[in-house]
Length: 356
Image (cartoon, helix red, strand yellow):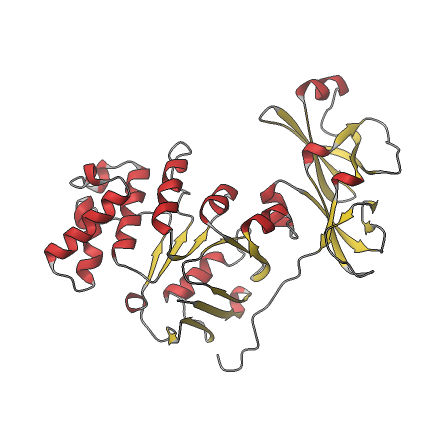
């Protein structure tokens, strides 16, 4: 089974096209307002733009109502029926699909069991914790036997302690299903998705295997998500010309001179100096400290280097020895061998609208 999506929504600035393969789980990521939830609403049939199509294999869903699409949409709010027990909430989906009551309850019980909720089958939603209610909502969505599962920030309303367990359960029940998960959490992408699509301003800017997109990000959003410093510029043939100066690194692919490129470094590989640093094999960025914050067993030092945010993660002892303070001008330095250079991500619009 293949899900094929093309959508153009001018008033929302959305113009995208992508395909999800059979049994593939895709993480749809991007900043707020990028169009992620709009994409899910189009697939589910809640929004019907004039220039779009949604196909499952050869079946055109554009004129199909939401309940006939074979698509299940789960939001961050479980939206359980408050007057029904967990068992009846889950059985509602197969019952609505035409199954007999006994069959529907058996299907519902099987899905509750798969999510470890059998012991809570008789409870009403108000008697469930947030994580338990979300498990019931997931069971209800899957009990309808959808061809495509859409999840919009499924863990946003769940406490941090419950998320790893729910993430583990969701990974199991999504195995072999075609699914799209909208999330801002890199752990969701790593645990659930084999592929990541990054949206920015209604366009796809990155699309590839999860490990590649998060390990070698080309867009500002993906770099921030994956914990990289990213500096855009132009490849000169030997270095990258940026607003913060000329930076050197190891190209991980063939680059054409004068083409857009990005420089990537891990903040943990960056050192902090009070005086301008020297050394031909290091990159140096200078500017005032904008942020000083604890980050686990490190201190995050973030500067503004000619309008470009850049960070270093150093030990508390080093921060104390340097007597760092917000506003102080420092130089962040990193070895060229610890720096990657890649082609910059470019927005990708959908195919021409002819025939949509």
